Length: 102
Image (cartoon, rainbow, N blue to C red; front, side, top):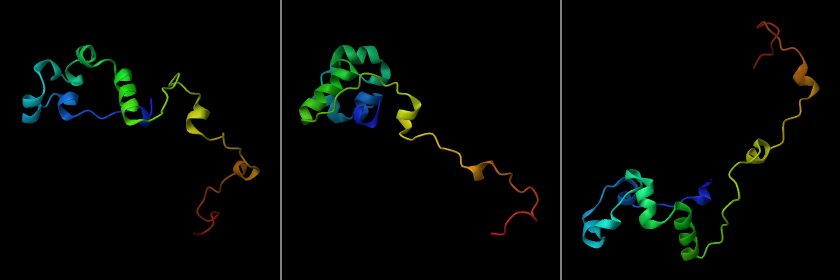
């Protein structure tokens, strides 16, 4: 998607590396990482989109979810195709003697 559509997970929920704090504050059913299985993670916490939308609401942010992540190349790059000028068509010198010195 984009950098606006990401969220951070703690090391435990991302990679399954749990700290002593996690063991003392989270029930075992909530100690599941996305790295160990996206489906299991989503069963407990909801889909990634649902989590992201909950986070945006909690932060009071208004960042709508895009309808599609597929954009035409010219839109994604945000630039127009370059227009070649006449000098771009001129032959370039091939020998060192013909080239201009730096």
